[in-house]
Length: 81
Image 1: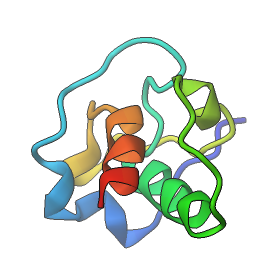
Image 2: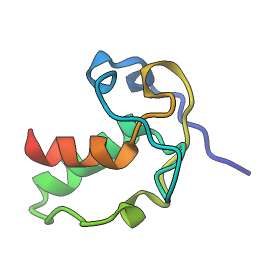
Image 3: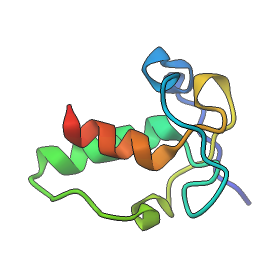
Image 4: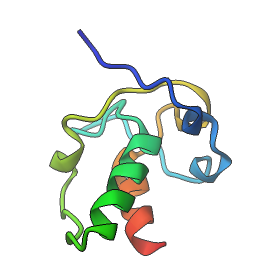
């Protein structure tokens, strides 16, 4: 059974500018959850992952501003913040 994200960050306008992604591990993964994961890892001093395998266990979301958006780009955006 799929785990679906229900958090409010699904409607966060910062994710509108993310490119779309319909492939790889990040397909349908929640960009908001990817961003939060990266912020947590960054705060712990853990270096950024170089591929989207880090997203494998994240919930999915096709709602709001995150629909079809690239979750790995959201992950990388958090490390650049």
